[in-house]
Image: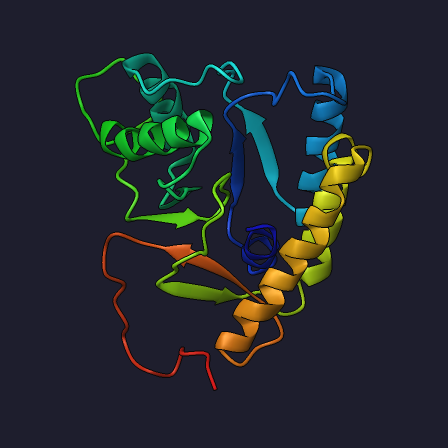
Length: 211
């Protein structure tokens, strides 16, 4: 959802990207390299980025992890959350989604030792970042026309993941083809897919993008 992140930031939204882990170990990375790559991607997208400090490959949906994320939500006073789509083969991704879902609830609790003031984000949207060979089934798309290059450059910033390993280089082209396809579904140059379990409300039809 890099194009959406860049678009929202350009619109003036206070976008905070939270890395639950440092992403290591990986075949071609190390903590210092990954931190530098994440910082470069954040600069390209125009957002702030923090790390929650959970352990990569061992992310679990438990109370402690929920409270770490709930604390971040409260301190940021988040109104909208984005999390990975819940159907995935990657255990960390599945756990991350459950953590965010419950942290959204925990963030509103009173009489707790969580930092910051209580807040209940109005929306939780899911983006597609999956290790399954499945076709996304979005129920809404966000037009990212004009921010395609931000998306590409942000992905390329993760050189240890998408440039050094030859087998992963194709992922960039696949992702960019995806945004072109989803853009074609709503009559724009590029779009990214999202899913929500809660119905979206419209105040009118003037904001609709489409053919």
